[in-house]
Length: 157
Image (cartoon, rainbow, N blue to C red; front, side, top):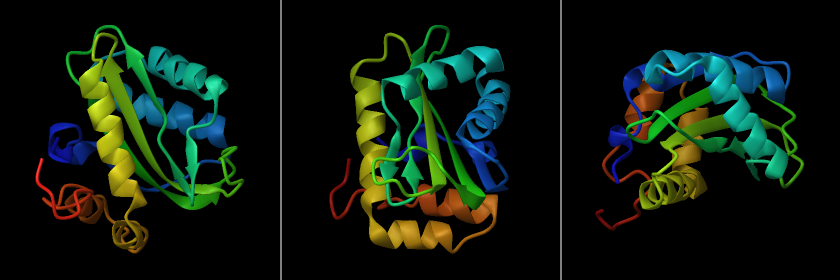
């Protein structure tokens, strides 16, 4: 699965300012609402409900808030680089500065898992993370995220 199938250039944000996790999720839900034509409150509640099951802060400054929702026709992603790291209840206790939101149709099953696995692979690559943290424009971040080999090592998918 190519990330360009999940995320478009309008869904990449740089220098996002948030005071805390709740505000961040509200702001990202608002941006996602404009991309997927779903009410932002529904998106926010979906993300918040998932966070209550356990933090989506996976460690090393990374978070992948996600959820399934009725009304979507495909998997959608949004990437945000924060201006300042925030506390996120991450697994390692470290603040978060890179966030990839993933929303999938409630019937998505394998597609949602493939997208989550793809993003997880990408965000485990130290070189990619360093590039993302060293880039301050949405265009630059989008280019890194959608590089053909990003998150794939030497395999093709």
